Image (cartoon, rainbow, N blue to C red; front, top):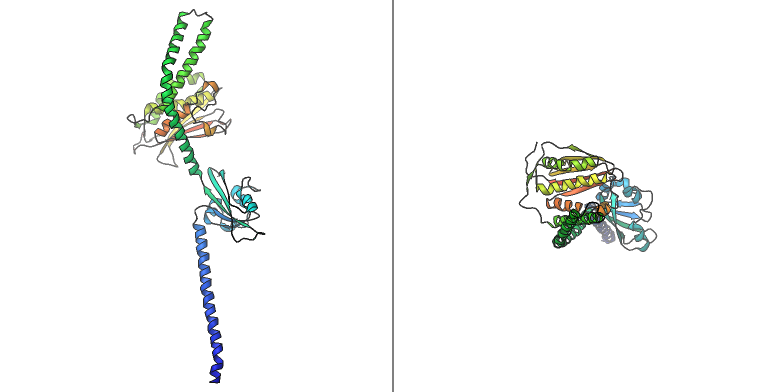
Length: 386
């Protein structure tokens, strides 16, 4: 009996150890599940997310960050974030990390073209439970390219709608008195002798009136409602060919040659022939006017390999190109680089017409390397035009 009593405490101690081990094992499993859940959640986030130390080195990175950097996660750990993502050897000028490390507050900036054609919102957040001596920051990249494009399109649509309403009303009010000025000026010119000193003044009045009529005509085109009944399948190659005789004389005088590279077996495009030709003529004239000492315009047609449902017409010139600061504004109403010679409505009208055809215009240009205007339109049906 004494021996039995002596063994009881040992059994109880053993049982307690086993219970403690079971509790530790359960706790370990909970921690392990939590770790796996955290890692799975971290990697499931579709935006690049990193944990970065105070010396701008990457401690953790999710799969999206790895894909964005085109590096394996293990290759990124320990590297400076600015080397991996910006290809720089120093901290990026507007990096929010610096602000967050200094203030211990979240900070966010939008950075244009961080990688090629992508705009990002870059945000930094202080990581909780970190020591003051070795703080770490959660760094988050969010692609806002689409959002920015939508915002720009919305602003442009509102601007175009407002100007269109104004243009229609103003144009009709101006047209009648303008016609009278032009008619009486031409009548006076005919009645006065050619050597009269007034002839030069009348000529200037006539030119100014004609310029005003051109502005009014452009305003009316700008405010014209979207096409409807005239939208039929069009052979774009044939449309381009039909405008060539109208341009031949002015192009010859400007010493500009036209080269065509038409695609074959192309699908038709649903469109209004006269309005599409207006766009093509405007783009060719713009290219011709830009090449002061002559040059060449190459016209190409085809179907995009990137977007098989897209038909394209390219107008590439050998002119001086467009300044980078002007490119974002070339489709804005009344924006012109031609001084008093331009109304600033030509490209706005082109953009509006192509938008009515559910397409868009892309522009590539570099100073002293010419410009390329690419009109993109949706193809119609599955027919082919040889």
